[in-house]
Structures are given as structure tokens and as C-alpha cells.
Length: 158
Ligand code: CUA
Image (cartoon, rainbow, N blue to C red; front, side, top):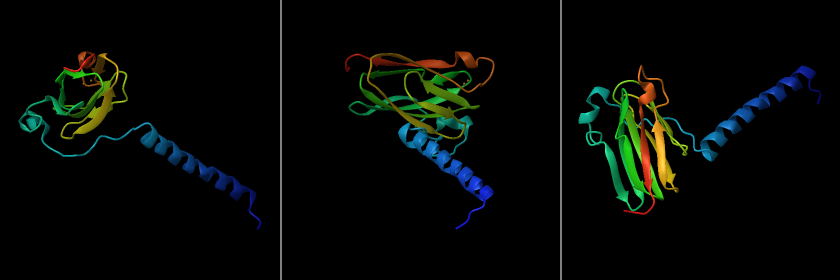
């Protein structure tokens, strides 16, 4: 079968799509990169009346497993300190009361966008004791740079 020269070139170029698909698959499955989860939609102005965000904070759901409900707002996180024992697996459910914020925890691949009216969820495991800074990485106004907090991972279980 005779294939035209230009047709061969275009067939070869179309393989770029296969390469892109492979790159996306590797990002999602090997590096655990995911989009903000659309679990619910709600009025962000009333977030502090909406359970479980009416009691933001850290809850131990089983030994070594923690759930955190967190609200970002100009220009702080509630809570802004998370204290867990070493080896803990921490799942954060986070939202914003006002504008788009970000949440990245140093030394982990937890990296979320905090969107008003939506809940983003991410999980990180802390196998080394120490303090892990977290900060807002979406520009959110004049004091964006002070919007930060920390995860304190204690050396021995409480
Ligand atoms: Cu919140 Cu930048």
C-alpha cells in the first residue's frame, strides 16, 4: 500500500496526542494530581453556619487518621494550626468564605484550590516529626503573603 509522504507526516504528528494522554495519565495516577472535588455547592457567606464547617478543626476519625475541616478567608486559615502525631494520615476538606485561595503544605504534594461554595479535598501522610508550613498560593489581595499556618507533627503519639 502506498501512503503519501505528507500523509505519513500527519500520521506521525497525530501520535503527539498519544504522548499527551500518557503525560496526563502519569500525572494523575503516578503523581496523584487531581482537580478540586465538587462534593457540594453552598453559599460561601454562610460557610460558618454550614456543618461541618461550623466547627472547623481537626478530628481523629481512627487511630492515626485525621480529618480537617478548614476555611480560608482574607487573609487567614481556620484552623491555622494542625497538631497530629508522627505517622498520621491527614485528610483536609477545605473551602473559602470569600475569594479564591490556595493551600499548599510544604514537604507534601497536598496542593488545593480553595473555592467559595465548593469543597476541595486532599490527603497527606506525615512520617517525619517537625513543623510543616502551609500557605496560600493564589493571589487573594493586599495581605496574601501573610496567609499561612502550620502542621505540627509531634514525635510520639499523644
Ligand atoms: Cu489567600 Cu492568597
